[in-house]
Image 1 (tube, helix red, strand yellow):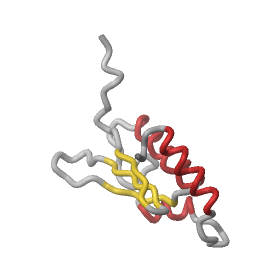
Image 2: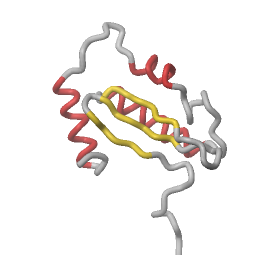
Image 3: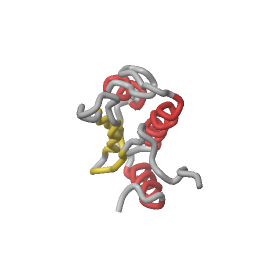
Image 4: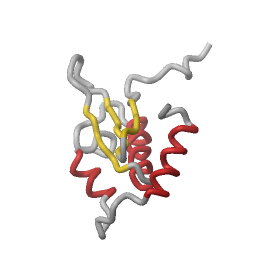
Length: 106
């Protein structure tokens, strides 16, 4: 019997609130608070959050500041648009629907 359905120790929590996606990464240190990253609720933000999850699977001990456990200012740089335009309502709606279809949001 395989245990593929159980979350691994590096599993993260993800949720959306308002115009932000939150990604909570567990600490490799027992009892330490998780690191919570924020991304814009856009296709670019969702893509960046998923990249972090993919990188976490590759690392046995993700160190802070690496692609598997980036710092907030690093994720801000990768999701920032050059024009600093406000969140596109249509893009936010599509990202929200995508999250809802996959069970990330109610």
